[in-house]
Image (cartoon, rainbow, N blue to C red):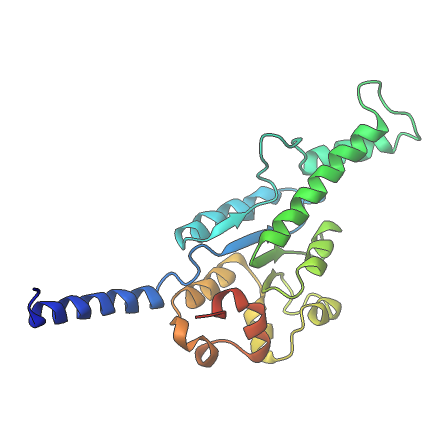
Length: 219
């Protein structure tokens, strides 16, 4: 039989370990999608690569639309611009590729990105008024009820986007609209260190409780 004093020490140690786990790595296993212009961006990989390393250190699963499985056609911004050039030749296409093949190739890439958005718990989108994008807005529409962090040089890049994301307070605006990658990472660091039992009181607004239901459900 284990003496009561030894059992008490073991229980206390287990309790401390549980407390530590509750405080640390709250975002471990959470899936985050990196959205933003690809087709019109000069370097869509740069910010994604830099933020991925840090997010993975937090234990997060990064869903990068530019990282594709082997079975997919290698469609990226360069390839999309090539396809646009081919299609713009007044109906004349090279014998090496048909219009149907172009359509299928591009559609597979779009479906892949939207599948990642559906799978994600959180989105980070990096946008700019200087860079045209269509896919990003389809992704935001699809995921509008999830936590979406917006990186943009403007405090509020668009009032339309403000309404789409359901921002209802100054606290939420400051939380979800950031000017640079480092500001988003700082916010994630705060969330990652929160105590799971006090989320409602320490961080979340009423809207947030629904956005972050994957963290708060049955905890």
